[in-house]
Image (cartoon, rainbow, N blue to C red; front, side, top):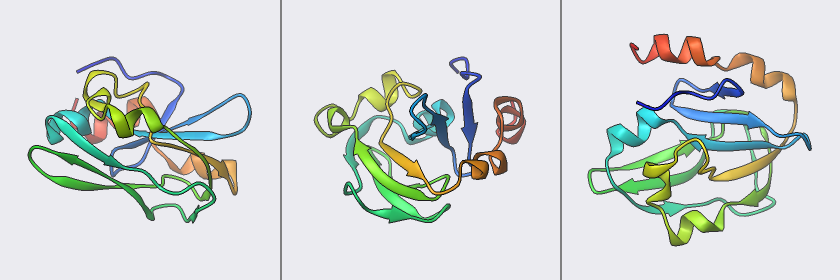
Length: 127
């Protein structure tokens, strides 16, 4: 298990959120989630401009074992997607905390306070 970066917040559904210096929120999946999924073979990214509520399905990650929805941990509008993942989905396995799926312009950054900090997330996954 890799070290969890201290600047991340986590949804109980294993997505991470990182508030960037420009006010945007990047979203990815945790190391714990990618380990459970196994080798990632496909990523379905949301459309730029799409608006999501917190907890709404925003994309899909497929592995050799299963397909899982990716949920938006906060509400907002998609302002960027990580096209690199579309071509190299295995990056989710090799660098889960650098491999963001999409970036949101959050509706309300205070929603980040509803997410787990790294200590809370580690407790939630039994580490």
